[in-house]
Amino acid sequence: MTPFSLAESVLAGERRSIARLISLVEDGGPLVADAMRALYPHTGHAYSIGVTGAPGAGKSSLTERLVSLARGHELTVGVLAVDPSSPFSGGALLGDRVRMQSHATDPEVFIRSMATRGHLGGISLATPEAMRVLDAAGKQIVVIETVGVGQAEVEITDACDTTLVVVNPGWGDAVQAAKAGLMEIADVFVINKADRQGARETERELRQMLDLSPAERKPEIIQTIATKNEGLEPLWAAIERHRDYQQERGLLDGRRRRRVALEIREIAIERYRRRINTEAGELIEELSAQVHDRSIDPYAAADRVIAHL
Image (cartoon, one colour):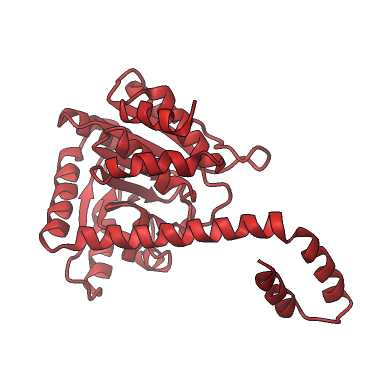
């Protein structure tokens, strides 16, 4: 199948082609650029929601409920669950989320796990392109659920239109949230498992920390019990309010432009890395010997590699 025929099948919503193209995106194959060029004019319509937070906060359960909510509003949905990578294969360890299999037979829902491949931000470099594939396939809502990796998780705010940060009652001193960078990236805080003791205290701590922020808009705080389907409609309403807020002030376009600028940089860096591996391998071997012998320093060697390319 050519990149262009594959792109046509994705535009038609053919599930196997969607899966195949996302696999190509993850592998970074040579066909990806041509396929994405064909898809690009048909993108820019989906609204993306990021779901992040500490491991065990209930992100997967919450994501599954968000999918149900979106379908209840007659919206088509794509889900990218960014999982830890296998140290051997580089693939996602958890596979397609077991908790989301209730939507597996719904033709208007597409769920896919992606590997972080060791990327510290918890967001695979291929994630923006995979989001674009789902967008071109007609998915109106794209949900990104990320592996909870602590401080480095802040990258999700660049990848999505609205970022949900999921915490639990008794989650700890709100100062820890500030240390993890979560106060800055949240568009909506979700206190999940709110039937546990300490939900009110957690909300109070978050509000106290948010009061110190100079930001014009403070993130809303919503309490949910995802497993009991409680608090989900208020959460959906909070997401819609955040979307309206951004659109009314022209902030959504600015956020998306920053995302594209970051993606351009990442593509350029990745292509340069490949050139170094393919075109400068022998030179690097020669230079490494010279650096080892102290005849040149590593910075001078790097300058030589750049000049060679």
